[in-house]
Length: 114
Image 1: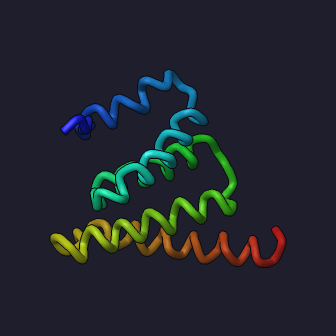
Image 2: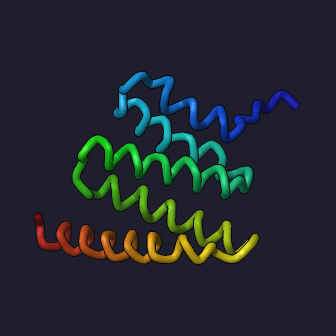
């Protein structure tokens, strides 16, 4: 086969392997989903994008176009994952709704040139 699979444990270790270099971690987490998308690995793609959002927040970066792109990609994989598989967990719903509201606010701010 030649393909290498990364376990969730290995993925968690990725953030620690960056030794505090959050920009490198953000680049890793935002670039990896593109490698998994063609293989329909939505759960892995969703996990990577959620980690990218966490790192983006840890860096204190603004909720700019890059952030909006990550959120939209995450929401797409989140929906795909739950359409194909089990229903969304009830405890996820408030977080998703909060994320969508923040997305709306960030989009409006960009539209207004802020």
